[in-house]
Image (cartoon, rainbow, N blue to C red; front, side, top):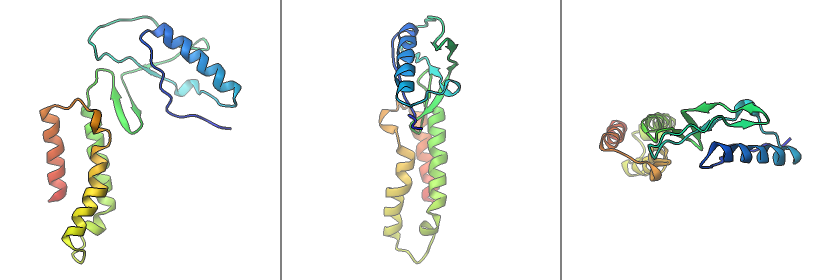
Length: 153
């Protein structure tokens, strides 16, 4: 059986989202895909600050649960557009990556220049994944700089 993962449907109203979910459910199930109702959830983006409650989102008569955040393509998307949790997650991923290559980075036989290149090509991208679309604040930049300086030391 085939399956699709990380499908995103976007609409300005919940009614429009209900129609899209029903269309996806019928089209996927007719092509031997299955859309798992228990893993399907929706996030209402409140970036504009306008509060609206248009009712429930349903799929096949079942109410789809609303969440305040979810992980999509390695980044944590939050309802209000905050990125604090995503930054914390990226810092922890970077530390995991650093630990994996610490054998190279801490080896005294390997030239310092090569260590710097490994760090720049392997460890730094783990932190900056998805950063090109972050609405970042000065305090968050400071957190990222502190994490980088701790690793370099």
